[in-house]
Length: 130
Image (cartoon, rainbow, N blue to C red; front, side, top):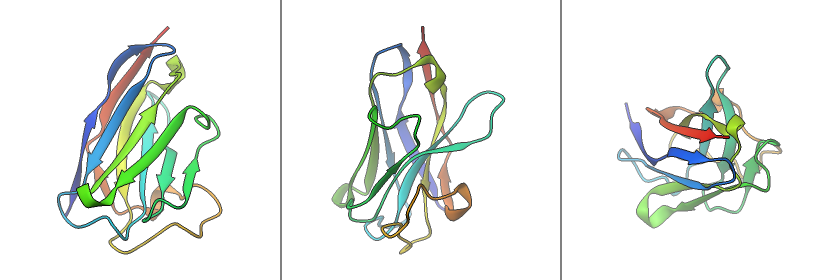
């Protein structure tokens, strides 16, 4: 079973920025849809952003559109999430997720569901104070 490895996160004041990164030690992500999810205390895990294998399609939750940007560097087997204009309601554990090897999301019409992803990281905490 592949476990993705996240880094970044931390604590920041409202209006600040943070970046997260995620690597897959198990296989090349170059043909695979990748995503970020988050889970706030007492809430269900929700999709934040996703990116198709070549980066040509990106998807965002309405709550983060215009503030967050997902990107990928396939030659480094890495996906990143840049978070700007952070708000206290962005406080959560952020998880990196990967579809099964070779599964893409380029032709999806919306952010793929949690059930579409096979591999996950352990999560990294993001805390935004007011």
